[in-house]
Image 1 (tube, rainbow, N blue to C red):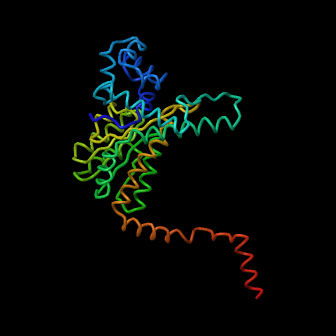
Image 2: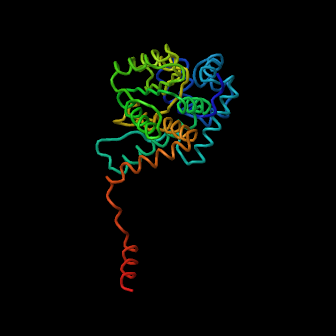
Image 3: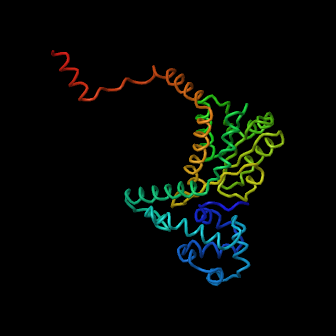
Length: 307
């Protein structure tokens, strides 16, 4: 696995509960004091985590780094970027029953902003390029997700349809499975699941893979069953807050990844996309109310009529 460019802290926050206990202790120490980790030796980190240097080395490899030196560089880079943007390492995520709306707004906006930045930091641009190229030339593109992930899939299908990509979102698992069976080499199947453990989404990707389609997983867990079933994996980051569990918090990150694919597809089909925008805009133009003239426009019109 190639070393990720960034986004490590977001991945640690997301994957922490799924790690073995020894690796959890290492992750917790990094998240508690990332700036200190960036300066610490491997022995220092192992002692703080109550584990061995061999475990720290294994931790590095699990997350795609060849050794501790690369891990330190990743942590230092990310904490430096966060400081430049004036983010706190640990944002306020708690909402009490009596908290005012301005506090709610700050918590929600902060959590969503951090999740989007973490996702942007860890996105695999080579994978996005591969998926966009495949979608731009595919005869069929199938998207499938359930719950909140289904909303992201439906939005992506709407955008791709608008630029003449033969794309479908199947909310029903049986329909999704039967249509996955109709895919062929050159087609694309995209499955969305925050946890990567949604059985129906895994089954749809597995069926699509059996028929030669390119399979893409969008998930927060790169070692999940869904990721294992996919040929290409695009990861998302989440920031939980009170009343918004991880699955509900993943929507904005999923939309960021899908929007990046969509824009990259539009680039590859530039002329066709512009023509599609013009045609579809004309089709619904009669259903839009005319724009109200501004006060300045009305004043100029009155002056003209008075001449």
